[in-house]
Length: 380
Image (tube, rainbow, N blue to C red; front, top):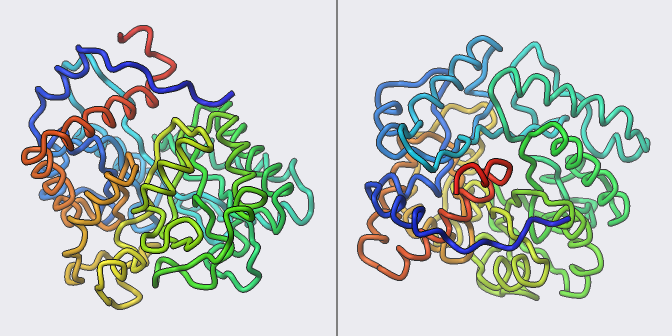
């Protein structure tokens, strides 16, 4: 059964949210990353100031089990909000799909990619790999695996998705992605379907450049969206948006920045009431949307050291545009030192725009509500 319709916002929560410093209010909507395997002084200062509601970690952050566990514990400690009636779990997320997209530290092995399990109809093997991921994640303090990939490989030359997805037809991808979602749900790990409205029909990589998916609305409804519909029915809590332009839906804006795609289709037509998470706003697809050309390497964050020199002036506008389009959580995957500008942009916009401020309060309630569904009766 899908997530319940958004609830009326309690006056207690409204009062609580508005009582926070604007920069902490902005922290509800940001999941930043970290520079390396330990927090530096500037990161600690900013985490305490902004108090983001979560974070996303990469290989560069996790060199060993013991180091990773200490880092995550320290991260949570510096983001905690004490003596609050409205406590919610701090989300520590990683892209852990198996195959080439794996963040867990050694000696954990990457495992097999999704497509290999699907091609072999190996649900038992997939279950074993997911449970192994979950066991390690829980031991480290990670509570969110940004999985499953619900894209359909409808374009064979698509390398950015490729073997990350579960196949070339809607039935197989639906079967395997919903299977992964159920395992994560049963293990009390937050799952996340990606990348809506579908990244499987593109020929370019949105990490590197703006991507276009030339599919019709009919094709989307009868192919790309079938796995997402099933996952929404099964109460997947998070969905990541794609930095992909779908001209049949919105000729100008990539999905992450499109009210039409996120509100009209994902929210209203497909009935998704969970949290919409932007893909990494630093990707070159978003930079190009704002007419900024950069080096390809500037947004590849698997193991590369964090760039301190790339032009990211577009991030302020992109963050506000993404929130206005319908995103609830913004991912920006280098370091909170560089991502702090996003929090300040949101805080400045809330201060200057009462309507936007009210909208952000409503988003904050939805974030709190989704993250505390199991304990809601104890809180309100």
